[in-house]
Length: 191
Image (cartoon, rainbow, N blue to C red; front, side, top):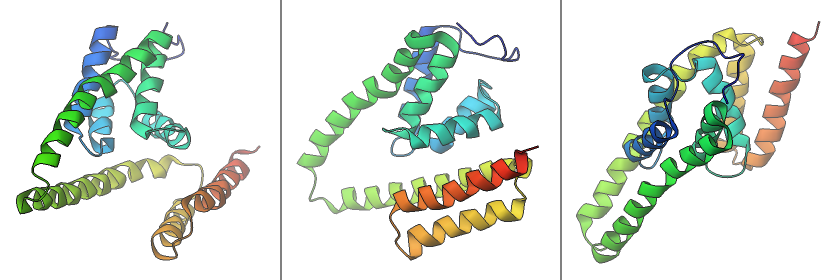
C-alpha cells in the first residue's frame, strides 16, 4: 500500500518493524520526542526526507492530539495504510503507557523527596535544550522555502515575541502569523 510516486528508499519492512521502531522512539524521547523522531526517521532510518518531515510535522501540529502521535500515524499510513497507522499508534502508546503508570506509582510514593524534584527540573532543562537544537537544525530547510529567508525569520521572531513576551494566546498567533506566512508563500508561488 505504498505510494508509487515515492522514490525508492529505505522503508519499514513490516508492521512489526513499524511498531518496534515507534516503541523505541517513544521510549527514547520521554517528555519530548521531536529531536529523537527527526534524528531517527530522517537521518538514521531515512524513511522521510528533511522536507517531507517538515511538511508532515507542520500538518501533525495543527491536528488535534499529540504532535508526535499524529506524525507516527501519518508515517505508518504512508507505508501500510490503516494497519500501518494503527501499528505506529500502538508503538507510540502501549509500552510508554505502562511505564507512565509505573512511574506515577513511584512518584506518589517519593513525591516529597528533594532528589525527585531536582531530577525533574534537570530533565526539563535537557528537554528544552534538545528542542532548541532541533529547531536550529530544522531551520536550515528554510533556505529552500519560496519565501525570502528574512521574511521567514521575521515571522519566527514575531511568533516568539507574541507568545512568549506579549502573552497573546497561541491560537491567535497561529491564525495571525501562520495565516500571514501562508498568504505570503502563496503569493510567491502563484504564477
